[in-house]
Structure formats: structure tokens, C-alpha cells
Image 1 (cartoon, rainbow, N blue to C red):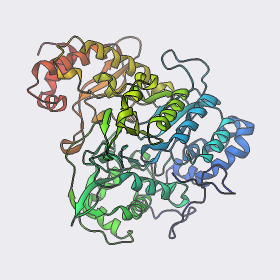
Image 2: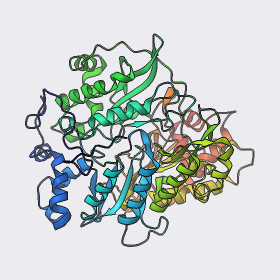
Image 3: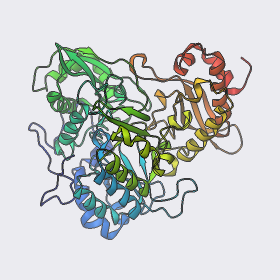
Image 4: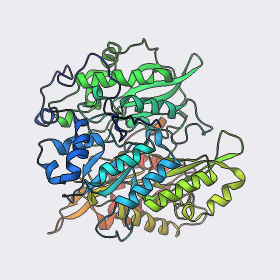
Length: 572
């Protein structure tokens, strides 16, 4: 990862990134929509300018000065900051990790920042204090930061080439890729280098910083789609054309309300063309995206409105090269995770994927992971879209010694099926939009479900096959429930006098060759009933499955009303 520091930019924010002629901030986009109130407010000045205001004013005068400036809280997102739901002087910072790969020095610095600055008022009963969260976009979040601590963290991060700029906001977010790009035997094209090049272009780029809404890009590199490409605004899918390795281009994927799989637009590009392609699509989105209704201001709605042929035509009018038609996809399956010990393409080396339930690690553990990366591996730590971490470049004769380390014992590559597959968003512990608590509930639920699997025969494949349960605190779907074996989405149980936390429950989501979103089976299932409902689903699957039938295949074959009876505990 490059270091963007210079004499005028000591915090590594790179506020004057690469410029492209033809657009300006004051009149940034040829839009076919009116500007809504929030759009007008955020365009009073460039969102990046909030960074200097934090350094020069808010860190010294406190958050009251920030809250007094109209639109300033919204602008915080562009430098990776969100207010926590606790209000006052409590903020979250999201750190960009392009392609999911950090050096040991960078991971160590994140861990030290968590220990030094991310201190909550009390210890969490399950997670303690001074922790960081790995997200489903391979980034890392720190909580309980004060406004005064943010410039200090930026200064420390800049020394090792880390940044939080554009980790949030209406801009190009963290670019994801296969977490074992460069070492995976199944790799077809270098996705990591491509992801980092795209991130390098957009990070700090004022021209493309203020888009209609957030803009997500994924770059696949292997034949197994482990980066979940087709739920992104731009999905680069490994393909071959005339013997050349590159990418087919898909656009308009996304989750939350109105989920949609990305659409192929009959374009093949080589890795060196990826940055220009992403730039042109960002320009298209900026010019034609909906700025009147934020609910419709997403790439998927623009893609659906234009259709693939017109979208392609609009893109070609902005693209600075003539692309080829789509090549042949090399996708063979959908890899759900990289947990366990796996051989690398480099002879004599392995990588070790470790399970971090719901992605939460404390600062000391991150520092220890950095030490292990240096002591046993190639000096990098890789973070995955399923909220785990991987150590690469481990000599085969040292794998057993690494597995014996206390940290690896706790974040075990041999975790139970539910603990291995559990994912959760931030939830109402910190997020102002979440309806329900997620992290603690998800960890405890996975542990209890794994214990129940112990009641099955030792020969049952369910005892070793990961089952993905994704727990999202609201319909924004940050935990990606629509692509889970079992997806849970925060809701409210109104069946009693008190309003209790509940979840919509769905089954059967997956990506890859058989891609499809789950079917919602039951709405507002009280949280107290989750364990028994999921146990009944898994037990019924165990009893009815044929040969090597997966949970996804089975759940799609069972009528919804029958699944609903299983969830409710009624006779089928």
C-alpha cells in the first residue's frame, strides 16, 4: 500500500488526489434529477474539507463545535468517521484495507490504536474493551474514539501508509478482492494488484468523491468467487478472451432493500484497463445517478433503469479505450471461506485461515497477529469478507508450531460449523440505524448451535460443514443476510405488550454459478426463539438430505409453507 504523505499532507489523507478534466465540484455533474436537501447541504463545500476542520478546530473545541455546523456530521463519512449512537464525544473510525491485505506493521499500528484510544466506558461482558471489528468489506473499525484522538490516530496511521479517507460516504468505498490473491493455487488473474490500483486512483480524488450514494467495487481473482463480486456496484469477474487473462464486467449489484445481482454488460478488460473502466463508470453514475431521492440513488437502480445495452452505450461514451466483448468466465464454484490450512501456489508454503466470530478482536490480539505474521509467515495479515483473518507464507514444517500458538488456538481454524459461518454487522450497540443487537447474540447463538450439533451422529457431515448464519440489525443488510444459508434481519416483535427484538428469518442464499438470494420464511421471529427455530431447520435438513445435498439446495426444494412450519415447530 502506498504512502500518500507529503509536506502539505502529514496525515496521509491525500486531499488533492488525481484530477480528471471535464468535471468540477461547484458544478460537478450533468444530472437529470433535482438535488435533494441533503445533497444541497453536503455540496456547500467539498466533503474532504472536514478533515482539516477536525484537525484545526473540532479536536480542540470538542464535538459541540462539529455539531453546530450544518452538514458537517454528514461530511465526517468522507474521512471514515461516524458518530456512535451513544452521541456526544463517541465516534467510530473505519480503516481502508484495499484487497484485504495489510503489512504486519500496519496491523500492529491498528492494534496499538485500539489499545490506546478505543476505550469504552465499561468492559463488554463478552468482548472486553479496546477492540476492533473486521467488516464484510475487509475493512477494520475502531469504536469509542474521541474527537481529540482522531488527528493523533491519523498521524500514526500515515507513518505506515494507512488511511480512513473514503472508507465511508457517498464515494468509492474499500475495494475488495480475493484475500489470498498471489498465493492461491486457483488464482486466474492478479486481483489484489488491480484492487489496489483502483483504490489508489479513487482515494483522495476530489473529482469522484461526491457521488449520488456509496459505490462498491469488487475484483475477483480466482475461479471460486470468494470476494462475493456480484453484490457490488462494479464486479470484475475473472475471464479469458483469446488466451488473455482478464475480467468480464458486471454492474449494479447490491443488497439492503431492493437486492439485485450484478448484470453482465458484455465487456472484457485486461488488468491495466481496470482503473479507467472504474473511473468511467463512476463518471456515469455521478452524471446520471438519482440525486433527488436517496432511496433510489444507487447504481443498481440506475442499471435497472437503463438496461444493460444502454448502460454499455453510456459507458462507451465516457470510456477512453475501446473494450472487447465479454470473454469466457472461468468461474467454477463459490468458495465460502478460506478457513483452515491450505497449500499455496508457492511450493513448500501454506496459508492458515483463522475464525474470528463476528469479526471482533481486541487490540492486543491484532498486535499478536502481526507478530505471528512476522515470526511464521510472509509479514502480511489478510482480512476476508467473512470477517476472518489469514496468515500467508507459512513454511509447511512450521504450520504445527503456528497452530499451537495461543492466539491461533482461540481463533481456531477448526471452529464448529456455526461459529465458522457466523457473521454480524455492528448492530444497535453502536449503529444509529440498527434495530437489534447483533454481535453478542450471534456469538452466543453460534456457540449453542454448535453444542447442539454434538448430539448428531459423529459421521454426520453437518458436524464439519460450515453453516453460514448472517445476522443484520436492520434492512441495510451490512451482514449480507440475503446470501446466507440462514439470514437474520432485525425487526420488532409486537406480539406482546412490550416491544421485543426480533428477526426476519430466511434460508437458501448463495452466490456463484447457482447465485440467488434467500427466501424469507418468517417475519419478526422473536429473538428468544432463534435457537430452537434454527435447530429444527438443521435437524430437518439432516433427516431429509440426500447424499451430498447442500443446505442451500435442500432449502430451495422445500415449499415455503413447509419451511415455515418447521421454523414454527408445527408438524409438516
